[in-house]
Length: 354
Image (cartoon, rainbow, N blue to C red; front, side, top):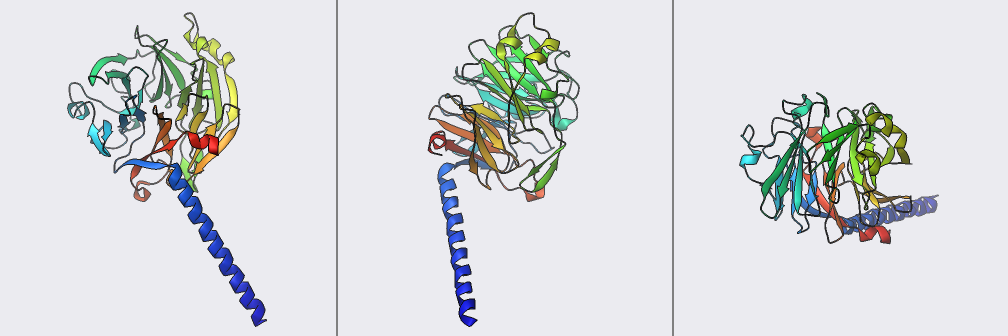
């Protein structure tokens, strides 16, 4: 009996060693997959990377303590962009409640201001999209929206730019809807009000064992590499949809007829932001499991990374060196349990090596 117990003890010890070794190996593998770029004690959501590898972030106005709305990450430090005055609350020209930032292929940075601080309702003047010239860091133009395009409880969330047709596509995660803005004329149209594709499917998510109760409508948005399709999903959902951009850009298109053109693409893990790479792979988060996932050009879901550091992958951006950047906003966690908010990057090449 003593011999059996000794053998059993040795076997258990061996299994523990193997398990620890395996976990350590997985940790080392993940360390190689994602690289820390910057961290902050303030919560960020959006991220943008320019053609010259300049990195920009934004901090949403979800509390009374938001010292900076838009910043550039320089040597790991947060530097107010385009100036401190723009980030000073109540200034003549200043940001109010920024939710996302994005760079286009013509060295322009777009800043989407919800004008809805702390989800208290859209303030007078409505949401604003700012366009900056990154060669001069000067404002090119600001786009406002008529009251027919937004609701009192709208929350303009994410934006994608079609530089060929000079159009901006925006999601409204407060009410649910898609806004198409003409960057030449400044005219905008709203689509899909009330459509199920832009509405939340669930009233909660279980993220890493934590119940997060919230119903968030259309949020993540992405343009296919050829700009022919607009992909989108509600945050509190597991369905990916798409629609031809040509449908939304027809001069005489009416919102009511657009719903018939919507295509259901796939059932996906709940995600916040989304981003296509040049090959047509759609990168997204995995809010419920601390994951980075990819819906491939072959219509397959690849669970690329599962890592405890990926605490709510929020927004995605890419650079010319085939790297994907993402922010972690830890939205699902109580503030008392949050650590530093972080930005990571990873090589797109790990997808082909997976």
